[in-house]
Amino acid sequence: MQTYKTEFRQRLPLYLHSLYLPREMKASLKGRYTNDKSTAVVTLAVNAGDVKLLASMSDVTVVKGPRLNNLTLTVEKPAFFIFDYDVPKKDFRFQFMNSIKVAEKPLKLTYNHGHGETRTVMEGSLVLDSANKVSANYMFGTRNFKLKYSYVHGGVTTYEPCYDLGKNAWDFSVSRRLYDDVFKATFESWSRDFALEWSRNSKFNGTFKISATINMVGESKIPKVFAESTWDLEM
Image (cartoon, rainbow, N blue to C red):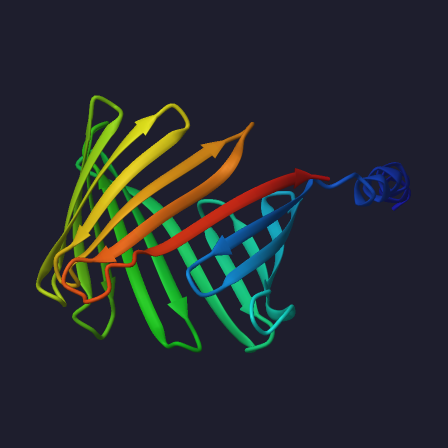
């Protein structure tokens, strides 16, 4: 008993000290713009050991003026699970990730379930080699099943045909990377939507995405514009 008390006294200062160790904290501000509205999302993330604690708030700032639109609390363990709780809606969503070997090839599985929406989605991605990948997405209880093939040519150009079983239609996209920039074109055969996108993910110049979508058979030829930019701040 005396030995246990002595060991406890020795370990107690170390334990108390660990409670006051500085946690890595990051804040991000994401702004989104479309033809009819703009929104801003603020996220505060704290690393707590193997997990991340996040709080996100969105604020609608156009037409009706500033107002708190959403507050979401998140617990995340990268590559294992994500748990989201929507405070205003009192709703939750969870996601589990796992990776297994199939014929010595890595198969990544993701299980998503939204409680309020009662929707469950299973996603799988099989990496055949450095240039070829096959992925699938299925929503339980529906015909929503998508099968996508991805081919990377020369390490910079990616071709992605996708078949949607529910719509019995094909989607096609091609993208090309140029340093930190990615230029992408997408065509959805079912909706006849054609989109061009420019995105950048740089540690020095920030992250942004700009896209313009036009319906090839619609009467209006005015493109739908979407812009998103993110600024990160370490605290």
